[in-house]
Image 1: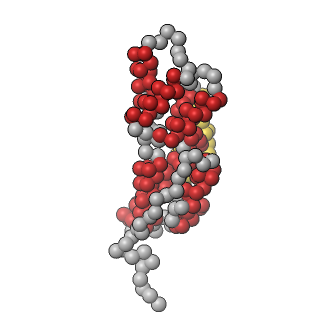
Image 2: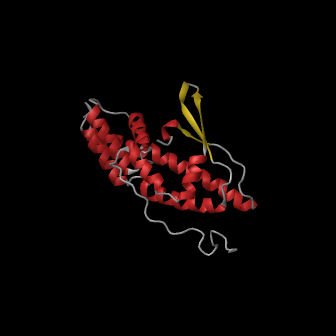
Length: 213
């Protein structure tokens, strides 16, 4: 019987192909394709993780529903390396913030469909810059989807809060997957530092809008 470790140290993480992603696809199918392209060990961990939900309240009352996702036992340093690799690709290629030019252009175009009365072009420019600042965390495709949805379903000018909500909804599944991969990586790295098969597991909190579809 061979004594070789199933994951040779000389090649701890096999090279991966680009993860499939098409923002034009239906969110459920898009999310499922992305998840199914992950290495099988990560898929098994994602299936075995535990999900809990509870309400979150602020001084203004009910805010939203918070999701607790806890990685299962048995997360290893090998899993952490795989998770970090997939997470880097998702962060850099799928959830990377939109460029300033794209974001500002999209905001100006959207606002031009709903012209404000008695607003000078200079003020409009400043307003668009505020929008760009407040939407700057979102990827270009999520902003485009949010703007398209608003144009097709509303007759009035949107608020920044409304557009943020649509952007968050657009990339909810991808953010949820990234959150869970990050949790796997953190637990696996702690396990590697302690030399144990798994480390103390702590829930990962995210708005329910980010839950996996």
